[in-house]
Image (tube, rainbow, N blue to C red; front, side, top):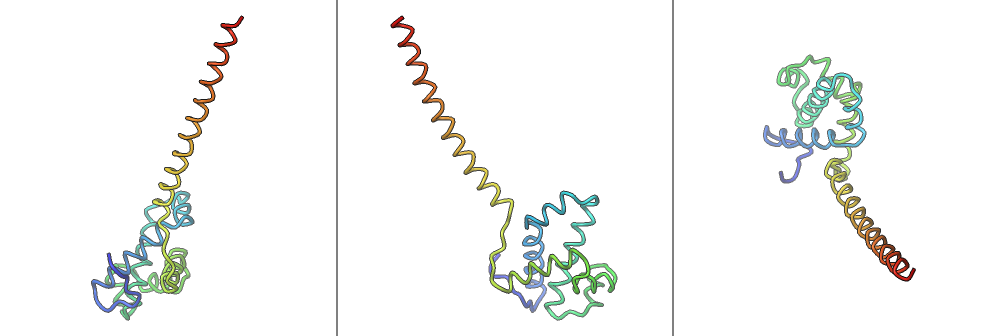
Length: 148
């Protein structure tokens, strides 16, 4: 996707920032937990997307009235997201601030996949070790039985 413009100057750059804000926010562990526990997941996700779109356009210098028109929401909704009065607005703003500081955005799902793969490999090794020990115990028992 290339470098993400934090102060976009055109539609393409706005879309890049918007997408980065959506993905960077959506895959945060706390956000994933909030979505899982939300009664109306679609509304929650919609709020995150609108908040990300609002912030990307605001950073490009687009006025609130135009943002509301482009996103099909009221000016009041857009202002609430931009000021952090909504949970979605606050979370998206946190993601943007991390980007400003140059922090890498963690995509939790990929991290969990890698963690699970590592745990799986460790468990496979442990099973193999136990299987070898069991085999040795069997051999010892067979020897003892033969001696009797």
